[in-house]
Image 1 (cartoon, helix red, strand yellow):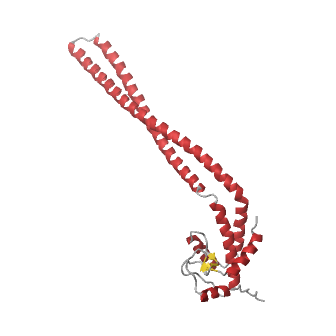
Image 2 (cartoon, one colour; image 1 turned 120 degrees about the vertical axis):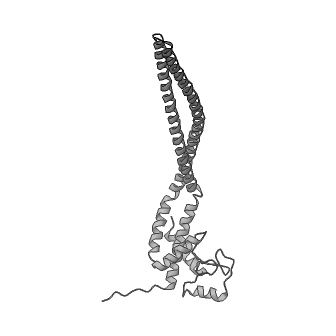
Image 3 (cartoon, helix red, strand yellow; image 1 turned 180 degrees about the vertical axis):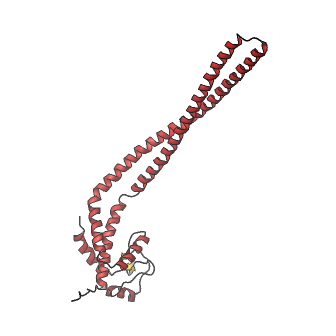
Length: 259
């Protein structure tokens, strides 16, 4: 025998949607208590990462220039040893031509020493400047890391205070969402995403949808109260329910999601 499909009334669909809205709104409240802290933590982590990359670049450049200094010192030492060698050879030359040739070699090596000394001074000046910036960067990183640690602890404390309730509500949200057909649930989630307040299903306040200044005509209010069809406010785009349903579901959900 074929299994009979149970038809869910519009009223039941509206109640299920509003119940889900109550749960999701409470989740929003919990997450809002954390304020801008999660964003602050993320921003600090990104800033620290960027500064660390700059610091690593400076360290590599300082090392490279120190290596250049070492190379130039080797050039100087080699030039000095050649000068000593050429001077020694000058003592045993047979003629002026050989002496002058060695003199030119000595002069060339002395120029090599002068040029290397000049380059060492240039590299040393650059290193001194880079070391200053490098130190400032590392001090900034250390300062930001300390600030990040404080902010993370602050966030962890806030999360730990509400984590059990949040986990419970997430579970309930998933459970209640399963009772709503996929198409209607997708509409609810779309409206909620586009709403600054996270509200997709609202009741009426003095004849106007909650959060709206546009009063609905009496005929439209009557249609909402009849619960015969899903009615969406043309101004806010939210799904509308009547005050009695709001009060009934709020009372019912107090017992279900109390923590």
